Image (tube, rainbow, N blue to C red; front, side, top):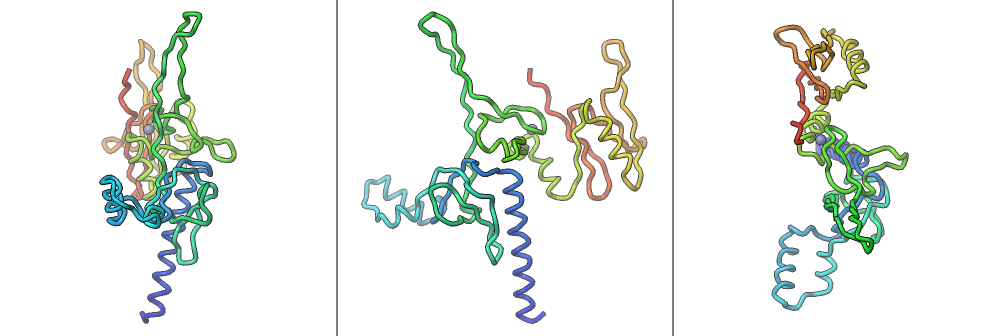
Length: 253
Ligand SMILES: [Zn+2]
């Protein structure tokens, strides 16, 4: 490869990778998502570390350095896009132009505990912030905010925020297919798996529940290599056609 072809190949690879990052950002974070943006340098940059040390020690700080190190607590105001050389960027409220995604941290979700007070009438009043449940397992992740609904009013996918479900998101990114098995999705999931080629055997998994035999999950594959997914579990089909189960978290109640 000559230098020019090498450059073109590198550019194409950078563009594809930048687009992938922008797409993934947009899939997860609608406009209005709370972020902390660093238009200048990131807080872990050695310059920023020195700046904070000077500041903490009460020494003089150059206003230009202060601007360079400033973090902006704000929300996104556009979807992410890529620049000509492939760098993914996004715009935020309070700053003109795009900021590299590598300089934009999605703000951690707040988790406000319920507060119980007694009003003038002596009645107990509970004040609570609405909580967001994980789309993967239903565990509560923290307060609902603007990252939770897209501009069509659909819930966003927040599984990557969930310790239990993050592995699923990573498997999907690596090209695995996943299905959440519930009593409602059972027929659809069984049908989709049944249509896969090469064909795999599926069968309802029956168990005695309170003296009654009923379906509690789905069996996929032939004995002894079969797997059993119960309602609440996720079924994963790996790229080599192998199936595994991502178990639902243990009930905490
Ligand atoms: Zn989860």
